[in-house]
Image (cartoon, rainbow, N blue to C red; front, side, top):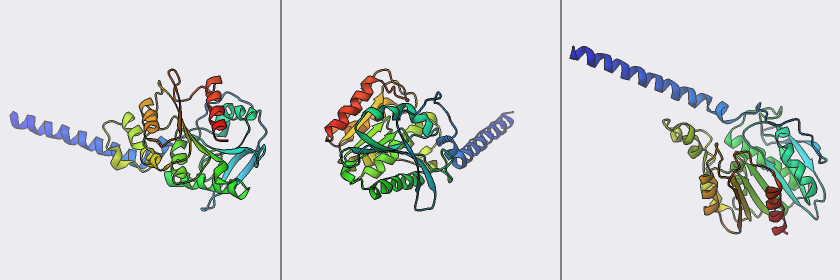
Length: 272
């Protein structure tokens, strides 16, 4: 009887381990589908109220990226490049871009490979290449490093942080940043060895120390996707000059209200 019980228990354990192994295999090969969501739509028929030009930016691996470009005055005003998060199209950021109409700022927002009809598949190295290509495109138009502001939104903070290292950019803005994608993934998969499985790590906490440009960190305390503690940690280890816009009630999608817009304007003014 005892032997039969042990055999049954062993079979149950083997089945559990087999199922767990299958889950690990699935997560390893499917993980980028879980991280990148180009078809997600969370905008409400917003209309763009700032004048933009549709542009195409070619990467070194011959992928054409869709971009929206707004030029006020390249000589007198700073130029902001916007790196969006892991979900949705450029239209999902219209409610943010419209606020730049009343600011003395030029801007370029690009869609990642695999997003907004672009060819290719997103990956950490692919997004770094996309971001670098967009910066190079602006530099060819006459924008110098000292007049360029990198703005990263959520996943885009990983690109902004990576590209801002050891550069002389005018400033860096990180909206709802994470310490690393490993830390963020552990929140959703606590029983999975994400450090071993994860392909796209985006280790912001290591790279933030290499940024010497003025930096603004924005985060809401009730963020349900990226814990506020991560944004606070990034702020703590960032070099000066650094500024923060922390709110008690904002979730992951921060409210672009008067207070946030004022924080942006104040940051831009500090760079002049």
